[in-house]
Length: 217
Image (cartoon, rainbow, N blue to C red; front, side, top):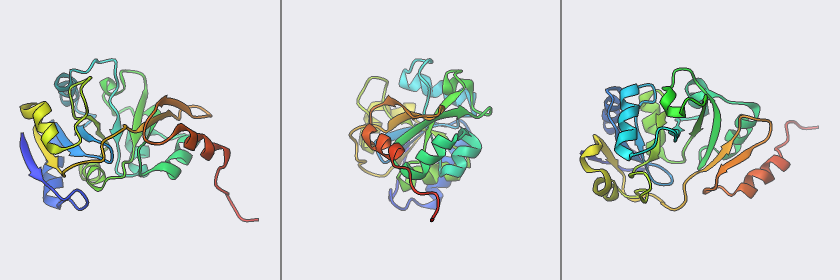
């Protein structure tokens, strides 16, 4: 595993370019997010996606979440954002709220387990967003650990857990750790809680009950 030490709040352009180039060649890159460390591959790269499943020991019926640099990248490349998804994105992104949306046709079917729906968010972490922006496409962001193990919240924990199974580590020190992102299904008319996480479900429901004003009378 090649390790690049970075300032997580202001990662160097050289480090992001090296990581993005590695992703384009099918590499697996570990990187910090606003919750834990994630594992990135290009979700259009079938061999990289299959390798990621093998590295984690993850069952193929468990889809891979994505992160995007911003809402525009998510809407253009991850999939279709419904009106509900756009409203939630405007309120909670960047941040630890993951939205399930209709998947873009360019994504490997393995990424969304052939369901036609994919989970995506824009993280509140400069390095994570910079990596997606540098790649020019949303990237996977499954936690950096073997399936069932504790997610890594430091670069040293990534090395201890995965060592030579990962090609490159952007080591930005400790992340906040704790709970993962909250996952909400935004494909219907109303949100549906899929996984409890950092953003309280009650906060999502409160937002839906009290939408922001659309104009001034």
